[in-house]
Figure 1 (cartoon, rainbow, N blue to C red):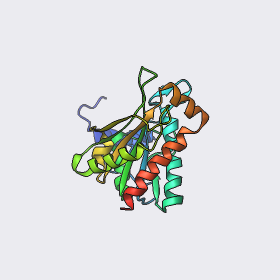
Figure 2: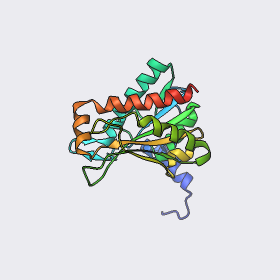
Figure 3: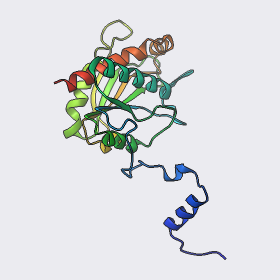
Figure 4: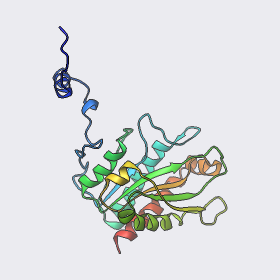
Length: 221
């Protein structure tokens, strides 16, 4: 006999009792129930995208893979050279919700939160770096600081990489995080020269060095 008006809570309870997939009750997507994977951390790095969301692509190069590599290298530099504790929002090919990423930073009690991305364009000649803030009062100064740090990268001509400045972006992670936060679009993955550097395995480390220098110097003020 079909029952009409069964509550959502009852349905979820029955589904959980029957072994429904855990993803149905995935914490952190706006619910504030995210946990810190390392217990606590001074810095939380967010490798952009993941799972079915590849982000920008350049042939076999996927943004989601490169941001994870860059985040791991940045974390190693921050830990070894600056003595900072670091956590990542993902350590594998998972795809946390946008708000959950910021909530993880909150759960870690982080001093700063950095979302790491690579940009994309239909024009393979386009290449520049840019940073974004979510909430002006808490984020703008840090986003501006990190924008300056990314200027340490060199471009195809050997000089400083082109810089598109600091912009505002109402990203869920930036808005959810309570500490100074920024989203860094390091370079354009779709750029022909950048693709060659990533395939050679050099650009990842250069970006990690620039990120770590910016974060480390900000926290040492």
